[in-house]
Image (cartoon, rainbow, N blue to C red):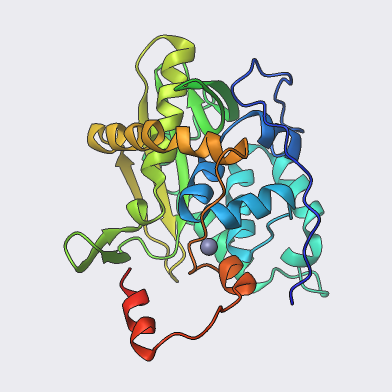
Length: 288
Ligand SMILES: [Zn+2]
């Protein structure tokens, strides 16, 4: 039997006036995750409520190499100090014992070199007018939200997001068309994230904002792209928040039990078969 972790009740404050002011230091804190919703947590709950609920109660620092590579590239454009501090903090993951870069971070350097030669990126994202890692908060459909924008230009009315992706033209299975024609942008639901950011900015500054996504991939010779976020995905993203958020608040305030997806690592690791299934059940489950 898996040992039961003792669960502390979460005191949820997401619909009340926020009791803490967000700063760079407390942005990712557990406390701030209980006061503000974020695109990351919203998507986690959409994917599997049971796994997200468990993670919210027992937070662990995510340290996947893909995440560190992304942060390595981002911090390079935040400031020299931020980049140096990030490298110092993750010294053993980034450097070998001989002091040379480990392979994924050599690749990250190649991506940075490519971005440095990308004029449109340097002009929009890396303009001296832009504020990097800008924290924005506000209410979306009655719930406190927080966002950290990679690069924000309030004066000119735009914000940029930098995505590091595996392969620029990678596509995924699309259940609507039954073909592998789903862009990585939709597969990871970046539309929901961008929609939340755009709406929060518009609420705060009372003016429209454009959203530019700059992407760099992790292929040997990294591809780069500049993408303008479209209205169709903006509306779809906001609609998804409006539709699912009431249920999410019920789960967080323990009015509703979190639903298990039965596919993710958490569900697999806590699954306890009851009785016996038929062989056909296994096939049927795959398609439900
Ligand atoms: Zn699950």
